[in-house]
Length: 290
Image 1 (cartoon, rainbow, N blue to C red):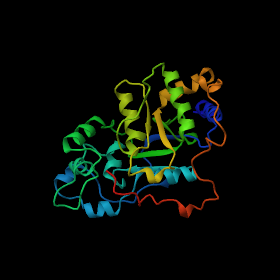
Image 2: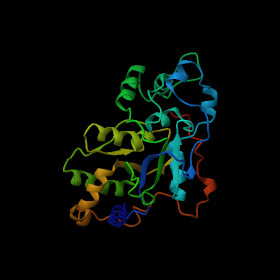
Image 3: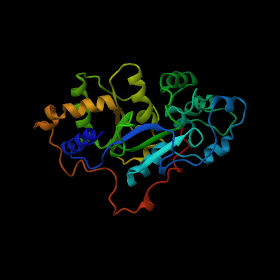
Image 4: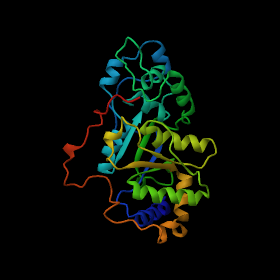
């Protein structure tokens, strides 16, 4: 990982980007950082048996992207586990909960008539949501905790599975072009429908499992936008593709006149220390996400 981290510094220089990427991996030990409190455990068995207290689940809600936001500020880890997930969607898209919950199918689409679950109406029908969630099932986890932390905190003994940037359009354009150049494929970048955490964790791993070399643009989840700046999105890719991008950057458009980002235009979207941390949104205040 030393070489990856050294080359990442060069990539950040070429992009004129002030925030280093994050890595995503599974671990059996809980890291220091930001994560949900112990709460409802989201499994199909508990759902079928009526053992999930949905009032408590929504009251104790904690968004993955919200915790990632806090971790980005402190350059530390965000994490979740099946027992401490804070969100049925986050538990599923991180691979910690499977199969998916039927409640989630209705919650993201039409809602459940006669109940407080009115639905988010992100998809028009139960059938369309079921098709999506079956298509977006991530590979099983390799540890108890899904850990998202700064890339420089990983080592060769446990490298990240996914590398993720948060950036504004100027930087994203550079990453987009570099991914296509490194992969030699004009379809090397995708932006599938999904929750903020699905584009960060699930989709890069799903594409890799299918033998497709893809980076994923995310951040279009309406429920998680409050944990991102108004003009930033996420860009995540498997480590193998990221290594290719690092190896290809010096001969890519990033070193040519075609890419000349302005310094003011691509500063990190993370607020400077002049903005008090008290003004940041709480990870528990995101509306009840799938």
